[in-house]
Image (cartoon, rainbow, N blue to C red; front, side, top):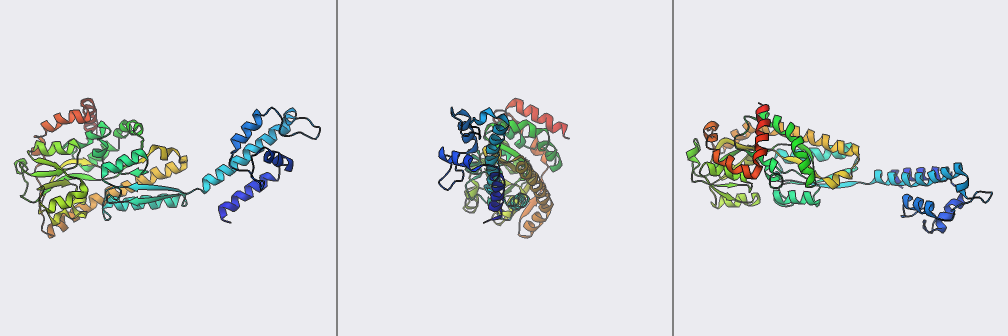
Length: 400
């Protein structure tokens, strides 16, 4: 007998000692217990409801008067029935282990994957093993858009989509992807962790997701196999791979690039075969996926920023206790905070290591690139919503 089983047995025994045998016998006689005499799966609420609705009293006192005629004893026994099943239900709920899936696209050695492990370990430790989280990194369960769909449906419990992926479902998230909208990491943090959260949470819940915390992905930069990029004109004519969202495409097309949408899982193959000339990603992604083995030019354009957004299926969330919900949210914030620091602290070192491997790195004047983004912003009015963009720009200006 396990500790949990022993605990349940002790609770039941202490309560049953107060109940007379004929009471249990009467329950058995009404088909609510199994042949061995313990209460089966009918449920305390159902038994109690049938008892209350029955035209005949279940029990009589020693003067052959229905228990309903002796209010004090009747109330006590009804309370005991409810108490029995409440104790059993609570005990089994406490004993149950909840298993969850967290899927994402970060490679095994990427800070996002490490943060995922930290999150899972923290939750399991603080819940004393009652919640266990299985991790599926590196697109193990499908592409980022596919995993997001799975998390909305509930076949995957948690996911880490970027704002760009969420923008396919909720227009407001596309605002984060406006080209050259943020001046720095600190500026971006102040916006996406601030009033933006309250602005988008209701929309997330409408599609069946609950927001836990912002993690990190980073400012996106351009790599290519053709030439160094120092000015906007150097981008013109390059065939650039971007994710499917319009905010990614619009920025590159505003610079005169030809955009090809290639699934991230096929990116390495497309780069090696020369199907595309260029791609754009944060430094940590370029480094952890060894894109520098194929491309020899990196331009630190920082044209878009986005972060991993930790979300959980709403139905799964609603099944958790308030304490469990607090633990998940606190551990998510802790993992996201660590990831931000890790990504940003490692960026300079990763660039240096890629330089040593033969990568040429340039630092273009971002202001010159930003002046060409008029057409991108016009196109994004439809993808993000004109009024949404106005509200988001207000948040951005207030955060400066």
